[in-house]
Picture 1 (cartoon, rainbow, N blue to C red):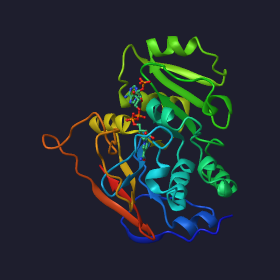
Picture 2 (picture 1 turned 60 degrees about the horizontal axis):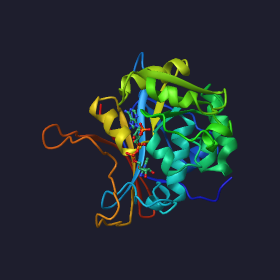
Picture 3 (picture 1 turned 45 degrees about the vertical axis):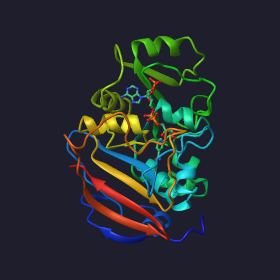
Length: 280
Ligand SMILES: NC(=O)c1ccc[n+]([C@@H]2O[C@H](COP(=O)([O-])OP(=O)(O)OC[C@H]3O[C@@H](n4cnc5c(N)ncnc54)[C@H](OP(=O)(O)O)[C@@H]3O)[C@@H](O)[C@H]2O)c1
């Protein structure tokens, strides 16, 4: 249960099959539809940025999405909803390092709706929690982190041969699977998606939660169908003392190969906007 007010739908041209949401989630989020491409999962991403395009303050302890959204409850609701309708949540090792205590489940970001998310996943015939996928070329991970040790969600580490060697020397719980997807990094999004599809048979949606380098790789290979983007009404500023990336890093697109998106939906909660763009 939550006393959160529903998101206000300002525009929605969403296509595809409607996701049948439990009543509490339908009341808060409204209608949710996803296209279902044949023979492959639909790939979505979810980010939050400030008005001046900052996706991370780049300050240890404050580098995650929380300070960007102002720990906004509606942003957490959208994050949890997208996790709840996805078979897997994929993050780069940089994101894990910035929020080391995080676990990529809907319940972790919105515990008071855990029962409703559980019912939704049952209705969608999905596993109890989405597969947490950590992408790393180096294998430079800390096996003591909650995502590996708590067993809240199954975990797959997608890595290189060198990375796997390093991981094999750690005391990772046996339930954490490691897959070698290439000799060297960076890993190609196709290889990551194929590996996730093999791990979750019948997967129809995969959620990429970043960070900016991983998102850049997915966009560069044309493997992102949609971006859910929360626009948070603060100006963070930059003075060069810390790196403050936008939602994409390491890949220049414009002006040579600009990527333009189509607007799918706009929702609002006070001054926060919840945007949805398609790259199809
Ligand atoms: N505002 C938001 O919505 C949002 C969302 C997510 C993250 N963030 C923030 O963004 C910051 C992190 O940025 P980031 O760009 O460093 O994040 P990132 O993409 O998660 O991390 C980069 C690291 O992830 C691994 N990686 C990424 N793509 C890879 C690929 N194709 N193949 C192999 N390994 C790959 C590499 O790890 P190895 O070095 O181990 O090889 C790489 O150094 C953090 O502060 C985080 O909190 C913000």
